[in-house]
Image 1 (cartoon, one colour):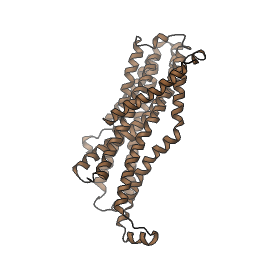
Image 2 (tube, helix red, strand yellow; image 1 turned 90 degrees about the vertical axis):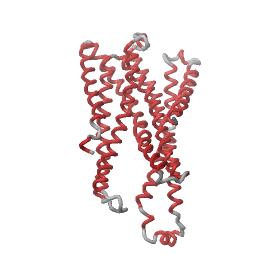
Image 3 (spheres, one colour; image 1 turned 180 degrees about the vertical axis):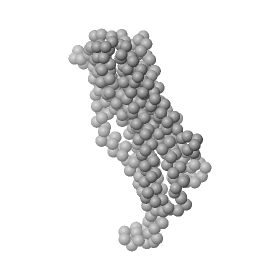
Image 4 (cartoon, helix red, strand yellow; image 1 turned 180 degrees about the horizontal axis):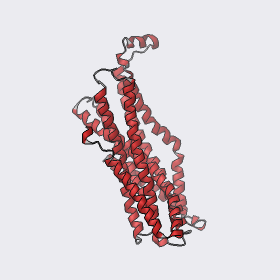
Length: 370
């Protein structure tokens, strides 16, 4: 629910900014350029990029606070013999470990909020910037808005079909990225259960710890490879199908990606912070309520830190690479005819579909591996 509400408010905020740019551009720039509104949208995207230092600082705060809590827990400082006396002697500190843990957990909650706040700005740069890139493709296809402008219409069937297709790709991508995280986490847990005795505080060896990192890295890279190849060949396939189909596809990728990213970032942050509320404010750690919020956190983390933020480069890559792909497709059609272009589009789509299939079924946990 929090993610849905946030998509509404942030989406309207972006519409307001772009509308202001449009209204200002309509005060006389139409005599200077063909599409002043698109120029204004580009300035809005530039404004988002101008927030880069603030966005980086805010987005970095979350991992710092998250790791601070983890470093404290892994240090096992409370179990060091006579540690309170040593700290008192060397630093004149009357240490309060319970207070320290509470402050670290509360600060981690603030970090989650900061991260969720930064991600809509990042996705905003991708979406608003994609608008100007898509316009450059339109200018190339219509030869400066002098030909085929009527194809940019709901009356042109390929354009409408492209609008529908982009949403399918966005929802597949968010599922595939979450699937990769889930599978890697399951494999790591299975290894820990089989090889590491959790009863002892110092029972995990360095070799076992490295193996856990290796498992997580392996599945992260495997998931990334499936996703990248699928997106790469899908971009080629849809650019080769029909140029205005591809324009609709790019618009859909940007719009669906915007709202899906905002939803996932803020819904994930809400799930993550629900656990912090139970731990810090309600003091219910170790209860069934806390167990429920831990389960929610396992959804919130891939939502907030994987799928949502990764939509930013997906939108930018598809738009930038699509500019080259559609120009190649148009030139090939002019030189060889539409038949070869459509055959290549079908071949590219088959490759993309294979890796889409593999990104889910190839990453699933088989029964014989349980």
